[in-house]
Length: 495
Image (tube, rainbow, N blue to C red; front, side, top):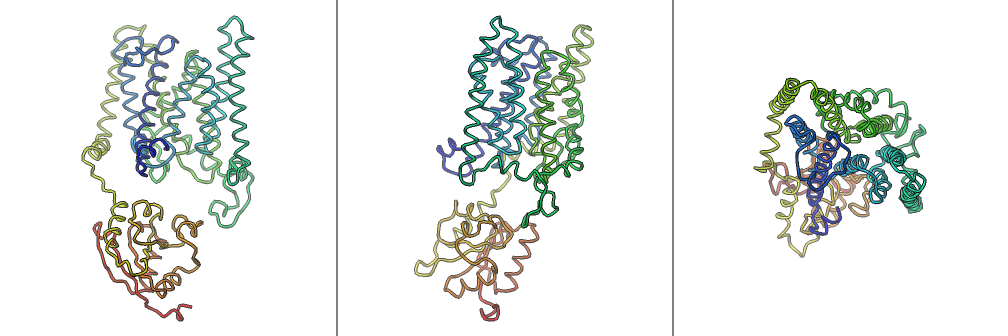
């Protein structure tokens, strides 16, 4: 994010970082597909990079490449996730980069990358520690296997092992160093709760199983595995859209195992299988089930789909023109069927981009606050706004003419209230608002951000019950109205 914030110091710059990562991932996937479907093992040249043709040069292979890339860019989570300021787009890029390194002949540069990039998974998310182990192991195996192609095995092995081993050692030193920093105990944070125990104040611990426990596996493991085959609704953040339809998921899983047969695709097939199932086993032991921790399954299954189709296509070539025509017809039929069954979803996504049909209501709610308080008398004490929205979001777009207080003890930053809103006694918010009113500050409340969260609605109702509310501004179709509070009960009665 840093380079994008240097260009434009705006929180929304994350979107352009996500778009850059998404497009870079698309290029890497294209190169991977070329590697998987090509008939030789030569390194991709500049001409290969710019050319869309695949070998053997045929319409069928080109159609397979086009359809695979089309499936990727039209996958719901691939085009939805760039709109979120979360790390999954970075994970996808790192995953595809590591896959490409596995498929690329080794040199000093790729060996260094092969030793560094797996650690970036762990530094991005603790949940991806299994990917760190997988790619380090597979790349080490790749280096050992490649030594058979050289005459001076000992000399080459020694040189490459020094590069690879030195890089791993340097990254281990970095991780050990982070363990010594205050609040940066990465390894202990990851593995400290593997042993079941209970801890107060945590919903995850309320069952006595801890954040990580094998007791969760019986419930989560089967559903994670089923999700790989497509068509299964599983939580992906707040969405339950399947990652793939069954006619992509089933061939995709089969393709991963078919890839074990051919020597050319064996290593990449092993990599994808180990990456998927080691991560599934690890995340099945986590207290919360969420497919976003396994978002790399999207390109993995797609690569498996390519290997499955490529295997069928390769078998059909020696059998004559009719076999190739049948395969091409089936692929075209699948493309048309997918396009028709997803037409409404894709049309909505395209029209949203072209027409910008979505309105940034969160931002506009802050604009409404700014408009109301811009002419607030300077001689009066600064007004206080009660809000359920993230205080730092409001701060970023605020004109600085008002201060903030939380609407609920359950809203975000509830564990860091003094840092977010100031040093106050938050044990009784109604009492806090009343004391501030008696101190001479005017207090206001706005309703944007409450949404359908029951706890926020209940706390807003408490404010309505304990104060006299006067509506002073409306906006966002009554979704970001502003009310001024007046004392309803004497302070002594509240005590």
